[in-house]
Every structure is written in structure tokens, then in C-alpha cells.
Length: 81
Image (cartoon, rainbow, N blue to C red; front, side, top):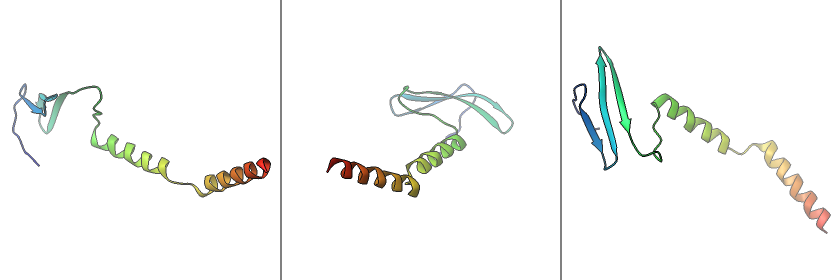
């Protein structure tokens, strides 16, 4: 991990097209501004974790859905014969 010290109003650049600006520092809170292309998603870590969790859940195979798919395929094959 790269650790950089910045003051309010100062920036860091990531690659050619991402700029992070320190907007405000109040005690232990830091307000950041992020400029990035629209094709890059930017999320707080807890939101990102929830998105990943939901994506994993939605990609899992449900046994009842699999059973239904097999039934439909079997019926289609019987109807086609």
C-alpha cells in the first residue's frame, strides 16, 4: 500500500485519468473528491462489499431452479418427438 500525506486542497493522480482531491479534513474525518471517467465505478468499501455479495448470491445455482429447467427440457424433448 502506498501511503501519501496530503493537505486540504491537494491532489493525487492515479494513472492518466483519475484525480483524488482532499476537500476537507475535520478531526479524524477526511472528505475526498474523486474525478474519474464514467466507465469506472467508485463506491465506499461497505457498498462495494454488498454489491459483490449480492452478485455472488445471484450467480449461485438454486436446486429448485435447476430442477425446473430439467423438467422444461424433458417436456420440450417429449413434445418434439
